[in-house]
Length: 114
Length: 149
Image 1 (cartoon, each protein chain N blue to C red):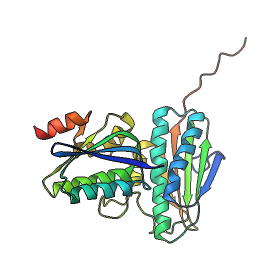
Image 2 (image 1 turned 90 degrees about the vertical axis):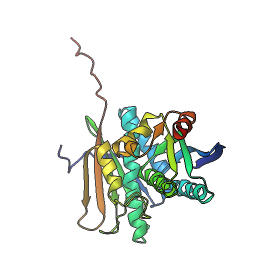
Image 3 (image 1 turned 120 degrees about the vertical axis):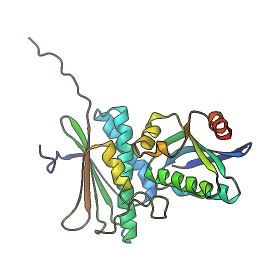
Image 4 (image 1 turned 180 degrees about the vertical axis):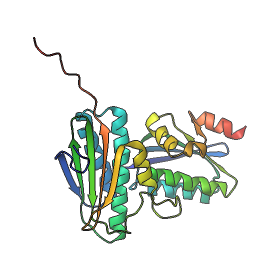
């Protein structure tokens, strides 16, 4: 079980595409990548979860940590997700009110720059 | 049947408290639950619930410096599918699935998520030490054919 992380620059945004399962074993890798992006001056992040097969509270905690870090620099962290099983976890925990969640990377970037 | 006296386990696992093993545990539980008639949404809920519960146990055992195996029973009753997780983490050492690094500070966050996904969450400390967490999901009802005449 591994986590695939791929970063692409899209204008002012860094798009982090995540694939695989995010749990207590793999979440540290995601945390390190988010810390690295912020350390490199990337304060407007789009995290694409479309290829994530599993997400638990450890993963949620890492995403919340990432949001706190970019907000310290007046930045933003937007999510892309259309999978019901993943969206359900955000809804149950009330995090749909914390994270802007979009159906595509293009929509996330478009809404961010409006 | 009383919730304190479930049917015997149809599958029993024991595994060392290693985070790397949780993906395999989810896979096994998913296969058994699907075979028992739990629907796909239920299987996904179950995977999250198992992962949260086992992560709490792993963190608790790691915090106590123990490598005692985590035991997991999968239980089939007439209309429900059950999971029981037992760990030997001493009281006060049990950790939340979210590591205590300031990302999320609610230590009970993981089990609260479990409670929202499954039925009848029962999380107790065992008299001899450790914890037992049990929860249930409904099995799909199988319509019996009409009786022969």
